[in-house]
Image (tube, rainbow, N blue to C red):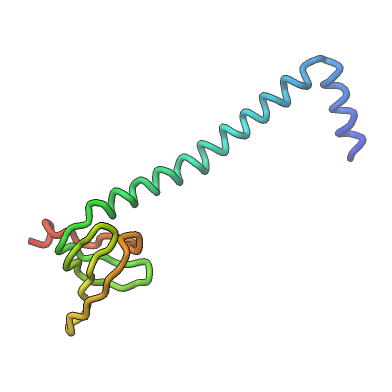
Length: 108
């Protein structure tokens, strides 16, 4: 198997296009990596940041820990979540929000 690869490598290098083909393949791999992995991840992070920045008092949210409740107050990087009938209040970081289930303006 290795002899096949060596013979292929020497035959492409004898054409003079071996270096160009290698560079084109590397550029294609980097472009493929960018469009299939890096770009969608950045888009997803941007959407999550926009969701957390648009958090409002009265929104019903689910945290990454699975706690569901209503936002009672918001500060710079934290918010106060009220859960259950006992109206237990817990302070969370905004980065702990997994999803906004019901927007405050939709609940009215």
